[in-house]
Length: 195
Ligand SMILES: CC(C)(COP(=O)(O)OP(=O)(O)OC[C@H]1O[C@@H](n2cnc3c(N)ncnc32)[C@H](O)[C@@H]1OP(=O)(O)O)[C@@H](O)C(=O)NCCC(=O)NCCS
Image (cartoon, rainbow, N blue to C red):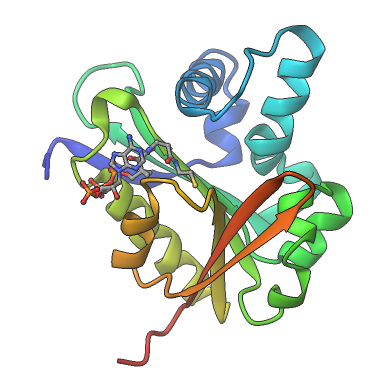
């Protein structure tokens, strides 16, 4: 693990600064689109909606207050933020869904009582496989535990390579469901793991 990397939560103050905030957003957006699983490249308004739904809404504390959060991995050295990866999430998917309905969230709504929080994580392609994703999930879990949240989940593709990553991080409740022609894999983890 690179010791020159810092794991830190993004605050309103960070984002509110006109120049530094914009740089943070631009870097998050770059990682998002480099890692997004899009069948066809999106442009214009469609691209904006896609970005809003899966990333920038988590940064909108006016809407979600402290119920959503964003933790990043960034280079400690240099003057630029140098963001290498992020993990965004919300502590209550049931509440979040009222604002952001989408099929992968609603498909598993009966499981949101046991695994209330959800996460989205992406690392820059040049920084994958270095342990940063593990650090980001660990930081998110510590945050959720401090808030007294009982469980957390992610939704991914049934055949995604990242499934072994989540399994190693104790997302051991797994269920695949289908909506139309698409299948989704739910992976849930209780915050306090009983071994
Ligand atoms: C999944 C991801 C967040 C893991 O972070 P990371 O820092 O690369 O992971 P770590 O180094 O802590 O752990 C390595 C594991 O991550 C996963 N991983 C690594 N690179 C990956 C990639 N390009 N795509 C998917 N999973 C990957 C693998 O499970 C890997 O274990 P393996 O080598 O035994 O297969 C990161 O690789 C990534 O952003 N991948 C692409 C986008 C993605 O899959 N996001 C999650 C959407 S649900």
